Image (tube, rainbow, N blue to C red; front, side, top):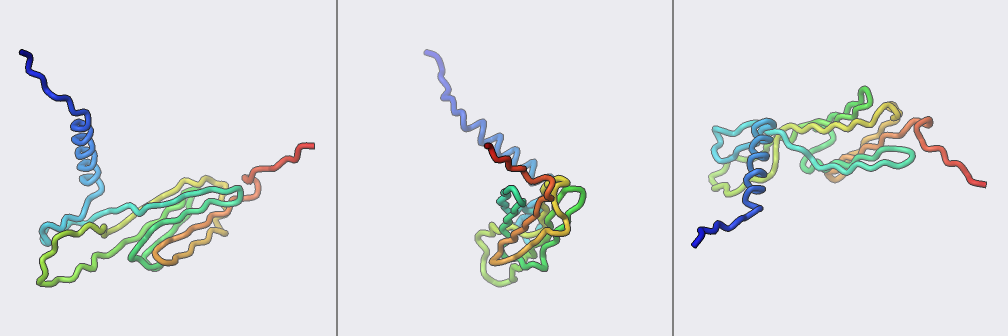
Length: 149
C-alpha cells in the first residue's frame, strides 16, 4: 500500500508569512521586550486613510499616545512626509510583565501627492490621537466640469 502524505497548502503559506515577517523585522527593527537589556529600537507604521476629492487630498493617521509636538510634517518635491516618535513610558515595577504589544519608537510615512498641491495651504490638525492633513489641489489640476447641452 502506498504511503500517502496529507497535503496542507496553508503550511507553506504560514512558513512564507513567518519568513517575510522576519525579513521586515530584521530590516526595520522591532522592540524585543523579553529581556530589558536586549531591548532594541523599533520602527512602527501608523495606519492611514488617504482619500481624494476634486479639491484636495485628505490624510487621517492614527497616532494614539502622541501629541502634536511629537509629529513633524514636511512637503517637498510633491512628497508629503509625516514622522515622529512614540517614547516607551514603561515604568519599572516589581510586577511581572506578561505581554507588551504596543509599538514604540520612530515612525515614517510618505505620500507622493505630485506637484498639483498648494503647499502653502496644507493644513494639519491633531485631535484625540488622530492627525488629519488636508492638502488642497491647485486650480489647474482640478477636473473641469463641462455641461452637456
